Length: 124
Image (tube, rainbow, N blue to C red; front, side):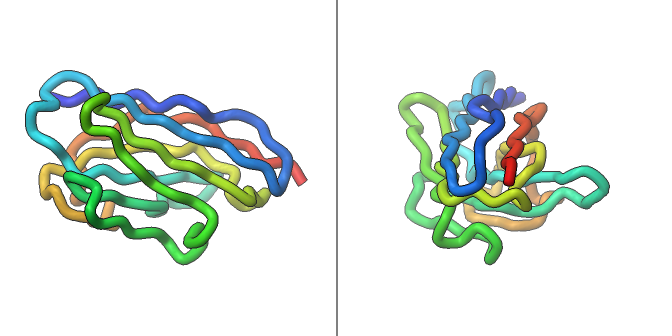
């Protein structure tokens, strides 16, 4: 079992920045591919970004490409999502997830463990 805890969410004005963190604990001897998803009120959960097991590969949704950066520090069992140039439409609960596949994947069904989420609110 792997436990994931997100942090770093909050309220920010449009154009601002936030950095989310996701700390993994439990059975972290196997390095997982990691992803960030988000869910806005009344909408389905959507893919945001993913990073492969050792960080060599990343993938982003078109809506965040060029503004968000995913990274990881395996020594700290932590992944990050640097979010710049935030827009009101980025407002959502952000979730991190771990995939045993080890490779970048976009489909939520490919992820095995999920955090509880952290709220990001971008005001206009």
